[in-house]
Amino acid sequence: MSNLRSTRPKKTNQTSLQDPQAAPRFILVVDADTVFVRPQSFEDDGRIIIDYIGSIHQPYVDLATVLIREMEPLPVSTTCHHILVDSTILQEMKNRIESRHDKKWFEAIQSLMDNREASSFSEYATYGLFVAHNFGADISFRHWRNFSSSKNLRDPDRRVQRTLRPSNWFLTVSFHSWMQKSH
Image 1: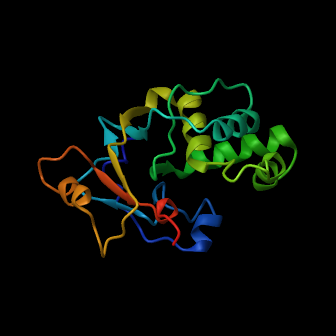
Image 2 (image 1 turned 90 degrees about the horizontal axis):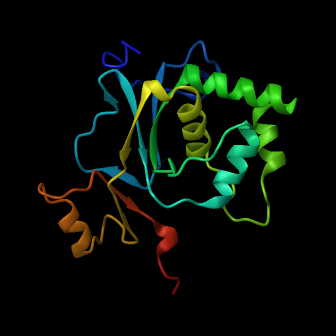
């Protein structure tokens, strides 16, 4: 973990994400609708910081606990629009899923998804659960401090403008088009 501080984000391509040998050790995954509005660190004294939110989407928890097995759900959710992924831990998680389900990791996920549920799987929740239970000493949890807006960047409302003030508490803003009312 000592090389976490010196690791700089690198551009990746599809090939490097498929080949663990070619991938960078740490990958910052960010939802396309999320913007960082404050400087952030994703490491604290050599430990990876994983953001959390207090509300839980139960279908994510149900699928993750069945997928990984033998793990109690977390009291919080790590589905927070961004996460720093350690590619060696990710590979270990995928290997464990494959050995426990006797199929490729993505096939195991697909076979467990509830197609009646609009949103039954979260890679953030699954990875967060796996890391918390297997590498708890190597991580720190932090509240995500996200502001969720249904407005877009071209037409920000006053609440978004207040969020961007330097004195504000928020670290990220997410512009959720799915929250917008249909006309």
